[in-house]
Structure formats: C-alpha cells, structure tokens
Length: 232
Image 1 (tube, one colour):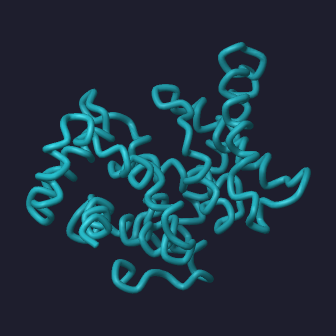
Image 2 (tube, rainbow, N blue to C red):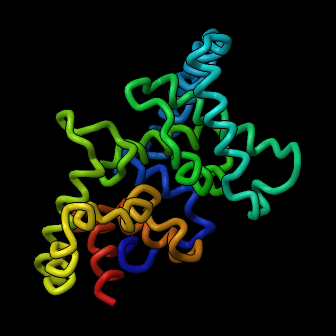
Image 3 (cartoon, one colour):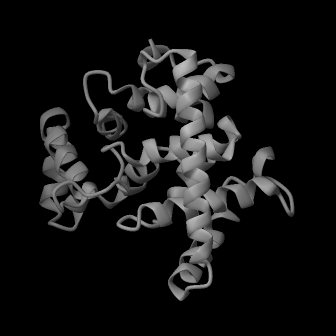
C-alpha cells in the first residue's frame, strides 16, 4: 500500500521508523517503548563520547564541513528558516554524532539534504538520528557503507546501464557512441545521491522515498525512476 499510495503526512512520524527499520514491523507498543528508551540512552552515550573529541583537529574539520552544508540546507522551508534556528543546530549535532559513530563513512556532502526531511517530520533528535542511521544502511544510497569494498555509486550506475540497454536501447547506443565519459552518466549522480530531492516537488519526492524504502519487489526502484525520466 505504501509503495502505491504513499503515507498520509500526519502519520509519517509514526511509520517512518518502521520503514527505516528502527522498529520491527511485528513489535508491540510496549516493545517499541523499550527500544526507544534503549536507543535514546545509546544516542546520549554517542553524543558524550563525541564531545570529548570536539577539540581534535580532525573533528574541527568535520564540524566545519557540516556547518557549511547545514546552514544552506532547506532554509527556504519554515522548519529551518530564520537566524539562530535551533533546528539547524539539531541537524548539525545529528550529523556530527553519525560521523563519530560511523567513522568509516564519516560525513559526505549531501547527507544534510537527506537528513532535513527526516528531522522536519520526526522532530525528536534521538528518533531522527536512528531513522537517519537506518536510511544510511539502505543499499540504494551512494553514502552507504561500500559493499565488499565496491563503490555503491558505481554499482548503481552499472545496474542503470543494464536497464538502459534493456528499456531505452536507442538512448544507450547514443551515449555509448559518445565515449566512456558519457557512459559515466554524470547527469544522474545527483538523482541517485539525493534520491530526486532536487528534481521534484516535496510531495512527489516523499512518495518516491517511501516507495524506495518499502523495497517492493526491488531495492533499486530509484533506478527504474531514472529510466522513466530518461525515456520521456
């Protein structure tokens, strides 16, 4: 149902933690409350440990990179608009804590764009952090942990090339004739990295995200969207 009809915006705060695997689908309310309390405590531990490293040069560099991005992320939207907006600090803290907890990934430009809709929907810092962790573990995203040392963007592009051969052969033959640079498909990198966040209005983007998160028949639904766009 989510894949075909998306979620009522008023219910997203409750349902997204299931889609992003914070809570098991079969869990009871009491079980979810225990999980929520446990992960809140875990988040506070991560936060405290990260603060101990706050003055290290490496962390100063990461913090500067995050600040540079978060102050430019979705500022036209009321939730992040205005000077001294506390939601900007919350977004910064979540990204810093994620970079600390997952040093093999750390922070990659574009993460703030993926985090912003989660925070503006869920509001709570700890709950948003764990949903973001779940999002980063989705293997459809470039910013995930590499699989067996392979770059996930390249994995996505390889699959997309095969889909283009199958569904849009004339287009594929055209770009192939232009040489190896054209086959890098640079124009789709942002589509994959941000899951079309900047290509569509927010209501459509959220439908796309939820359809991808549902993993209905495939974990690579976003690539079929790319094929559909190219075929127009």
